[in-house]
Image (cartoon, rainbow, N blue to C red):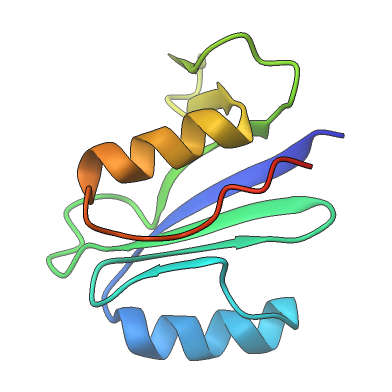
Length: 109
């Protein structure tokens, strides 16, 4: 099953984690202290990343977690929206490439 992906830039990770735990009704699967968090629900793959200066737009990118994705792909549509398509394993590997010391399980659905 595909999961819609939303990636937000946030000013405060800890406050944002508290907020989105309430909104999503669950804890994140991955937390990189002070930098990043990732939630996966039945229909949503949702991540936040610290961007204190807010030079990025609040929506970093949109996309799909798709188990049938052969590899990570990205494109920008005619409206300037950046879209990504990736598998759960692709996302796991991307997180490890940025934060190699983080430990978390990648339990493929």
